[in-house]
Image 1 (cartoon, one colour):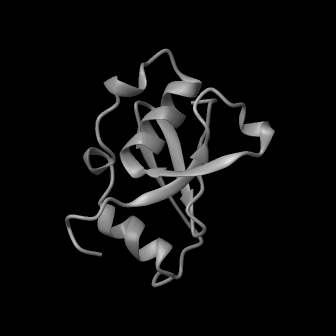
Image 2: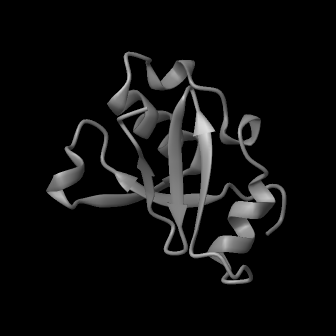
Length: 95
């Protein structure tokens, strides 16, 4: 993926409950920031870009199917963030 293209993943719409089932393609930084903000007291703008927590190339490899793993989990502000092979982002709220 060229460096000038932003990586998109799937995340619940801002303010929508995860249980609603609605997702939208969003830039990785926005998706991770919003997902973490939804389960913490942080504002999405106060969450660093995803590459501060994980190697973006690992996510690209996962999404391209070039990895034997079915998901990738990394820690953001003390919470486990998981991206699956389909590009869905989720955050464990119980950290």
